[in-house]
Image 1: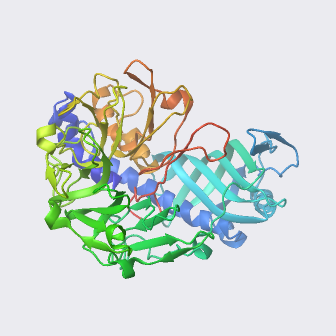
Image 2 (image 1 turned 120 degrees about the horizontal axis):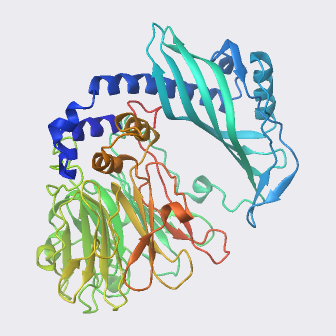
Image 3 (image 1 turned 60 degrees about the vertical axis):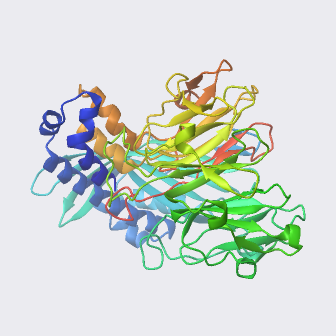
Length: 553
């Protein structure tokens, strides 16, 4: 996916940064880039296999990855000594040795390190950067990141993060590691478990085939919404799916009952994201479904019928409009007391290609449904100036300028993000003027006050990947003067952004100063005070295929 996007934009997108496309493209040996990435992905995929062997503590398989002439830093032993990092996390002491050992001693140290953990949940070895020497048998010099998640003998959840320099020779399409030098090692353990995985006993677990396999061909159905559909004071949950939707009714005892089929919302045209909103102001939660197709609205009939049931009112209310809707948000934009609905619309990537890498305008236009207060809506995105066609993924309403009107932030994939300030009967895009032009491929946006100064800050999730960063480094090394091209293509690996509200109507990008926010290819999330310490934390769900296979993500 990453390589596909990069090669697509080499000839065209860089010209938008003021660099002649053909000249820039001719300066890059695309065949050489592809060859280097083929070698890099081969190494990355082999390290994925090594990761699985580490997770399973399969020392026989682990040993096959290391050559007889190995020189390596031994893995340290886990110490009981620790120091607090926060009120619920502590650092474990694990100093790195300055000496190198041979293959048998290294494998023994590795076995002892893995054995010191009571259990191992996940292991990831990632190629961060790599250089290759083209010989009969290619040689790699790479920087890799190592992450291990498990539990200590004291039953504490533990995270191991390490960086290492790796040297390997490829013989018969197999990378034999002959050098491994640990440069950084951090081990953290939770003093208490803040969360427990309870989906199965709670009744909200749904098994699905892996992405890209039969039965799960697309990530398009991705939404969840919370609302009190039966007005019992407890939050219920609705999720969209490829074949069916699910409505989980909160039972009040830590469990949920799935009732979508009983209330008329199980089988619908494929929806991408749900939204609960009381669209008729009768006190109960109605259901809007964004869709890659015609948008849908289901009226909750608890009031006035007294029976929990949803009725499809899409046609009669006027929301049955076509879009590539990927998400929907609601707010009263015209201050008439009725909730309005905004749909972030994308386009069919791979079928319809963006007309620009960073300034695309050929996405399906976003929709703004203005609630008329009589059970109907009028689509007025163009009249309000928010018919964005920059391949939008997500949006969020909020009062960004303190005038008590609902403004709108839109995260776009192939175009610049937008901050629309509400002028009363139309919006104006002020993202540039307020310092909110985010460099990444926007996937999601959330609002919160991370520094407790009383002002609304903005967190944006973007496309990012280890594969993308590797490719970009080869395309534009540090000594490259292709600054503008690097900026444009850097959207691929921008990572998440945090903008601090300065309190005067402007914002400052503070990702590097208070982060970093390394969350992979992140999609959404939000601000939540997870540990109840009075400070809002950030949750960023992530994951996608960034290499040529499921292994190299």
